Every structure is written in structure tokens, then in C-alpha cells.
Image 1 (cartoon, rainbow, N blue to C red):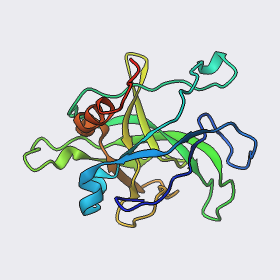
Image 2 (image 1 turned 180 degrees about the vertical axis):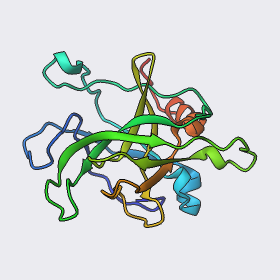
Image 3 (image 1 turned 60 degrees about the horizontal axis):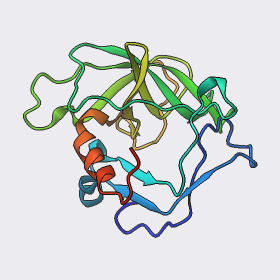
Image 4 (image 1 turned 90 degrees about the vertical axis):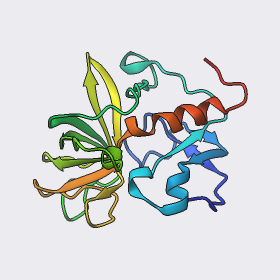
Length: 196
């Protein structure tokens, strides 16, 4: 979906861990905001969108009924200067035959260090290598024990596929969230009746 997308029935299944569960509660949203640089140019480093829901999602963490918790956003323009490990979380398969699809997968990935020269926005994209076994789509790291969303997996590097491959040396890439914080804050600030 991009600038001319006509989708109006947006559903967010927060806390879903198995896509075959048809009775899972969902939240609706009719408004979405696509990063304008992605809408105009289809650049993977800007493949990021926000969805405005019609109602709030109850956050009660692992101790509550929903198991849904928040994740923190990073400081603006933070770039790792060394390699780091992060969790990759999302839906994927557990082997090359495609079995196990639709089940939440979580596993470690190694974030490659940022480019010391960011004069042309080289660090807008986050690159990582796979640490077997699960595949996934969203990367987070922990800062002082708090989960921080650092990237959104956009493509298996060089293939255009959404999920990482299962080979131990597979690589992936996607938008580095810290380099999009100004757009995220400006977009959310533009909402009517923003709740603090």
C-alpha cells in the first residue's frame, strides 16, 4: 500500500501469536500515514507507516488478560557504533518447506555497526545478519532492561522478500526507527485530540 492505497478496513490484531486463530480480538483504524519519502520514491529505508486506531489498546503486559505491552521508541538519530544483538519478532516459517507459517517467531539477530560517515543518510537503513533459527519482521533491543523498537524488517537483503531466509548467513535490512523519529513525532502531534 502506498500513497494511492484505497484500503479502509484496517485491522490490528495486537497480541496475536497464531494467525489461524480467527476469534482473536482486533482493533480498527481507518487512517494510516505513510512516510512521504517512501510514498514518493519507494525507498526501503523509508518503508514505514503509522496507523491511527479508532480506540485505545489496553496494555496489561504478561501479567494481564491480553498479554499486550508497550515498546519504547529510540532517541532521535541514535546509531550503534559497534555490532549489537537484538530480538527479531514476527510471523514466519520454521523451515524452507514453509511449515509452521502463521506462528509467532522470535530469535536473535546481529545488528551491523552503523556507518561513521552519515553525510548522505547511510544510517537511515539498518542491516543485520541472521542468528538461527526463527524468522521475524520487527527488531528490538533492550536498553537498561526496557525493550526499544530499533528497526522494521523491510526486505531480505537483495531479494525484495519480506521475511529473512533460514540460512545462518542470511542478511536483512529495513528502516532504522531512530532516524524517523521526527516524522513519527510530527505525524502523531498532528492528530486531533491527542491523548497524552
